[in-house]
Image 1: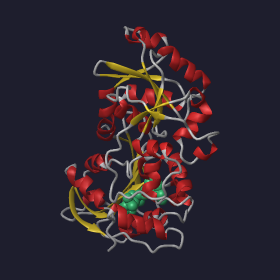
Image 2 (image 1 turned 90 degrees about the horizontal axis):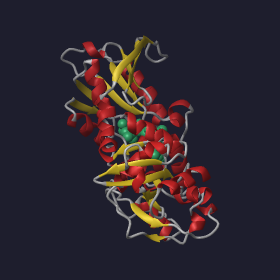
Image 3 (image 1 turned 90 degrees about the vertical axis):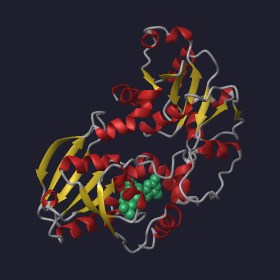
Image 4 (image 1 turned 135 degrees about the horizontal axis):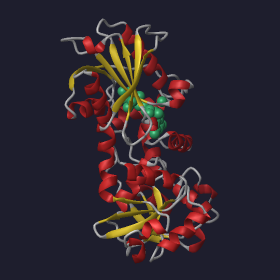
Length: 377
Ligand SMILES: Nc1nc2c(ncn2[C@@H]2O[C@H](COP(=O)(O)OP(=O)(O)OP(=O)(O)O)[C@@H](O)[C@H]2O)c(=O)[nH]1
Ligand SMILES: [Zn+2]
């Protein structure tokens, strides 16, 4: 996990990194963050011309602008296999790369991009490269080039100041992060709606942001009764600011109040998975695309992300550590039930968690029902 986390930090600051696996290796930099210095470091470490590695959905939009308003595909996104695009020299510049990566900024491109699929480029490492950008919570768009042979010799990458990560390390990362959670702090925190509440913080060995469990009453001592559980993904805008775009604020406060009214109490898992796992910055970009006509699902895909990038294994690890093996889940999302059950948590039932539309989030709630299969009763 250490290599992945370090490499993700370098991508976030615009520094190239080396990805290797199956006898091949690529020098990569994030299109969103790379500057002139990063691009010259990348070309110094490369043997061939650089391409843009990008999700198929984003590439299709770039190759046939303007971006279509709706996708015809129903249900969750199929695996979005990345593609590589050849870049004209004028597009291999920091501003253009940022705009190629970001559909919310592409209208600022000086000219329609003259880009074509780069058929000769090996695609073996592309899925791991895109996964790495997502772990870094950057737009899944990377400048990539085959690494030069001296770079691959012992210590070669280090001499160029580049960090190296393997495909296997990248692919193993989400499971390792989810299962390595340990309790690091707890405290009693009386809440307005639940005076008997405690917060337990969990930290993953990757050094990422902590996940929190809010325990209302004594759900660990519920005995034969399965206590209420809400898996709540962080939503800065809804939970903290009261944004009307979503239903997160009412769901958060409503869940806590409901647990306080139950004899067996309940546990709310507050997961650091902002924006269904794409991060706050990308969620803001998705909102801009939604204002231009896309729904919440197509906006994620237009950015190159899947409809829902969350991993509920984190929740299962936390429940196990808390000694809560069976729960009744406050949710309308069938994926949460399936995710917990797949990790061995007993799902004793679903408790509907619906709140009335507010005049702004009506379309968002309708999309959750129509395209995410949310249960509305
Ligand atoms: N990408 C993206 N994320 C959003 C949008 N609106 C809300 N979110 C995020 O979606 C997550 C809300 O998920 P949950 O509260 O778990 O809701 P859910 O998956 O709909 O399931 P239940 O509420 O349990 O029925 C939070 O992380 C929000 O930040 C949006 O338009 N785009
Ligand atoms: Zn929200």
